[in-house]
Amino acid sequence: MKRLPLLFLILGLAACASHPPLETVERVDLDRYMGQWYVIANIPYFGERGNLAGRAIYRPREDGRMDDIYLYKEDRLDEEDQRMEGIAWVVDETSQARWKVRFYWPFTFDYYIVELDPDYQWVIVGHPSRDYAWIMAREARLPDGLYEELLGRLDEHGFDSSQLRKVVQYPDQLGQPGFQ
Image 1 (cartoon, rainbow, N blue to C red):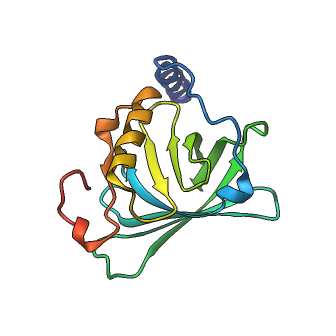
Image 2 (cartoon, rainbow, N blue to C red):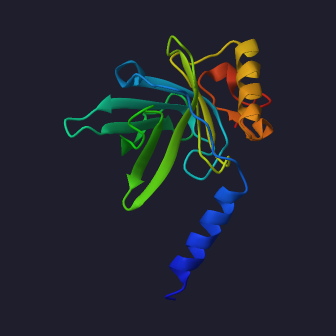
């Protein structure tokens, strides 16, 4: 049992070693980044798999960190939002593009802003392992051409964009190919 933490450390380092460092955008203006972002697509994982109408709200806190509020619906678009509340903080003060996020203590998650629209209308967020990625936008729909362009950018960062699935935001998207 005493060696279990060492095993997790070795496995974590091996996973990171298989990829070059994940590059982020040069600089994020946190004031402009704050607010609501719709989850357009993600690489599904246990915490978001199958969720509908996913969106994240970031807002500054007095202690210098940020609230990270994830809203979603479980089964139907007309049901009340479910809510998860987390905390995020910047770990790279120069770029402000590398964060840590925590929804359940003591577990933290790396949050890297790898692409960001100059007008802060869309963002690509990824994890250094390349096992997790999100395309988010200020509006609940992205034009198809822009979505395809963003998938290409994910591939350029070493992600497998074929793993992304769109998140249903509107009733006409239910059951459509490419959606969770």
